[in-house]
Length: 406
Image 1 (cartoon, rainbow, N blue to C red):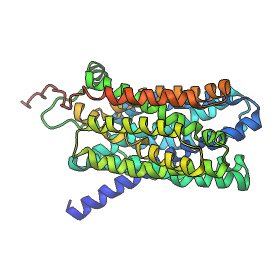
Image 2 (cartoon, rainbow, N blue to C red; image 1 turned 60 degrees about the horizontal axis):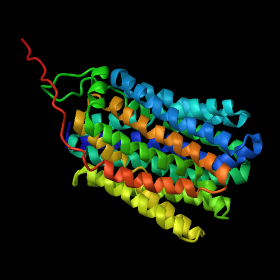
Image 3 (cartoon, rainbow, N blue to C red; image 1 turned 180 degrees about the horizontal axis):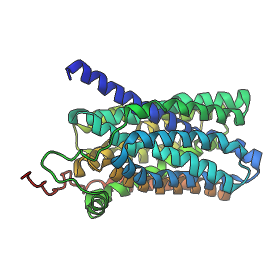
Image 4 (spheres, rainbow, N blue to C red; image 1 turned 180 degrees about the vertical axis):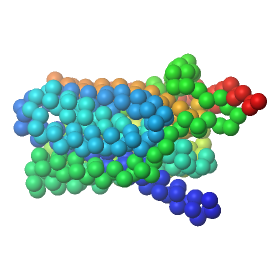
């Protein structure tokens, strides 16, 4: 394969992975815009609907280790295909659900589970497997930016559709858009079963997970990602509510969500570039420190439209820019062979934090009429996450050598 062909293949891989993430993540990140219409239509209350959204955060994480393990064995293409169909189905059925249990099923199990199957664990693993080693850091940044691009593009579209054709039709249009990701499954097909470095013994899924759970750096990384999940899910679910609590209209909410996604593109690509130049644990500490400062300043600032957009921009730059260095450290510790499974485990801790962020956001607001307590918790957790990454040692785990052929 000549250089031009390799370059073409690399761009095709990036387009497929980033495009899939754009459609699945973009659809999920606009769901906060539908929270108020759902509440008005069903009368279930903000806490009950937040519980369904929070369960979706948790289920999105729970599916990823298993989806990753399946993708490592049978190939990413089949997993991505099933995931995209489930996202579309769950999103399409959401308007017909009038109970908390129904919303948990449509939003929390179908849509979120499908997005987990077509989520970062499988996409990052496929990208890592198909890209040359020296391009992997930037490639994960580009794929991660795909999710933000989807959020930036789809949030204003969803807000426009809600006001133009109603929230029910808007959700169903979003569901159909997800199906545009189906061709990407053909590009990203293949598995990582034979991705162990030459001369090293392949490690089974159970052994790889057990080794990771005994690794101090992996555990610290997972703890920091728990905090990231708390931040991301709270913002994704409740940023429109925060904007409304500031006395601003729906369009400000749509643009705030869009700005969050736009600056996440910048943060993700920039962090993907930085991963190959600075220590990844230091980059993670810096991201969480920026979040803490931004939250404190937002609490102290007047709540005007421009202030909300500036805050969304700063948080967007750090929103999912944690993914490239986190994925990079998992790959550095354990190599690419079990990448989907192990990054899926880390994503699970992210989504446990996401469950708490989404659920507590609605519960605390309903109890107090304010988001201030959650913002304070956000800031304190960000400081803790900045500190927890500092002891991590960035060194590969030694694995047994493969037996030489007779």
